[in-house]
Length: 230
Image: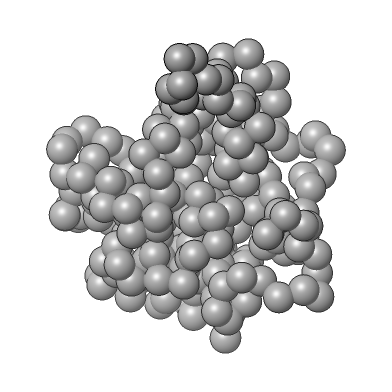
């Protein structure tokens, strides 16, 4: 069996060609891919992408009360100086926060099957994202395989990607087991980074995935706004 974390690193590196001019998307793929291909492990790589969830919570101010009614707090992200996706070469990310504490090597990852299984799920999510409009033409498939070829995939890795390309999973299957908020947020971030939204079908697919991952509309918008940065 191939190393799923290494394969995810290759998929992330090859997917950089789909991000266009979106710098934060490229930073996310480059940072996570570099960490995985250097053998740092998935927990370290995820640490580069989970900042959005914690930043959103920290930016929410306590509600005020006026005339007995609660005024909902509004999160203001415009003044944040902390990048959600650190660029390569900066200090290493913090461990993945889970249930109020840091998750380190040796502890149980809140996903069935551990890091290898989670890496495969992230690959499945990225592959399925390429089918968000319900189709993939021969030209797009050729481009994907050309980018994969540049990453030096083994025969076993190619067979796995080929099988996923021709049988992408539905949103319910993709979201299964991703009950931890940070992992769900990371899964949606990868999907939103991969999808090129140019029709209502892509938007509908992303909305269904967010709902299946139990991601709030506020968090969904926040992730998409962060990824939209040039």
